Length: 389
Ligand SMILES: Cc1cc2nc3c(=O)[nH]c(=O)nc-3n(C[C@H](O)[C@H](O)[C@H](O)COP(=O)(O)OP(=O)(O)OC[C@H]3O[C@@H](n4cnc5c(N)ncnc54)[C@H](O)[C@@H]3O)c2cc1C
Image (cartoon, rainbow, N blue to C red; front, side):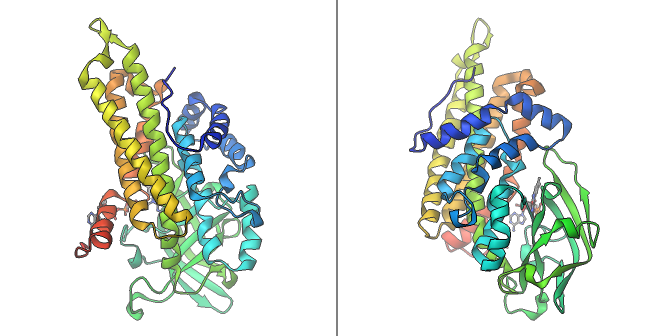
């Protein structure tokens, strides 16, 4: 049995409730989903029915009306229990563009269904193969023709699309050479995948290192009704950016959950495994990396709570959300390595779940924003150094 290491905050009731649900879906469940490259449908349905996926949707639209702090704890506990929030975290935060920039009519149309789980909005198509992190140069266009937009272009790494009814799409509506700032002229749409796939939109799954459903998407004269544009034309990049701080804090929380999982696994194993007539945890070469990981995960957690607190108070939290994401992704990756090393050869055996979680947590150094781009953000926006790109 892993040793339960306490995490000190005031959310024990919430943690216990999420843990109770997660206990129904143990390592064997996640291992099987991973081996089958399947989707954790039973888990996501249970989480949705319990109301946790609708944490950030206000009560007037059928959600739980909780803050980002509570939402982050939900994500943390899923990963802490050995699960993978990456299968469903989009349902929690992708709707935020709609919530902040959508019309009242759009909110009434979509949010109650998203809150109940009847509608899944798990997918957001921003990244493109030729432009990568340089988002404002994206090449997918949406050209207005009467009461429709006609979309052409390509996206890559569009996740959870095959488990979604709706998708958020960022596309250029005014050519780059006709805008004063490159962040202008981009617009956001909600795409009804039930109509779009096969009618101007094709989807090709990308097999990847983790069991993460993600795709290449091609648009060939896809028609989107004008009423599916969210907010004003040309301001879409800003709407997406405004939602990213919440996303960063939630991903940080997932890394913190992963970190605690690795530390608990590693410290328990280090106490049990006897080699050269003593538990391997007596050796400082084994013990100290685990202890340092715990220090790092707890420190990242504090930055996560700071970001969430500022966000929930309606204050700017860009720096804190980005720093929390970086600290947490680094801490969980260090914890993953310490755990893998502690398990020795057994870390590679699927039945211990270490290799699965190791693969899963590695992703967060790269997506949804890579570590270098966070440092570039801190260098430019916090420290006021010249833009590095
Ligand atoms: C499994 C998975 C799921 C994903 N899901 C989604 C999704 O649902 N929706 C979506 O829109 N996107 C998604 N992404 C895309 C993800 O956000 C990008 O992969 C990420 O933003 C990095 O972009 P890129 O892969 O094009 O790397 P690139 O931009 O090509 O960068 C490659 C490397 O170069 C570094 N680099 C680039 N420019 C600089 C610079 N100026 N200074 C220093 N270093 C630099 C980067 O940090 C990175 O390490 C997903 C990616 C993966 C792998």
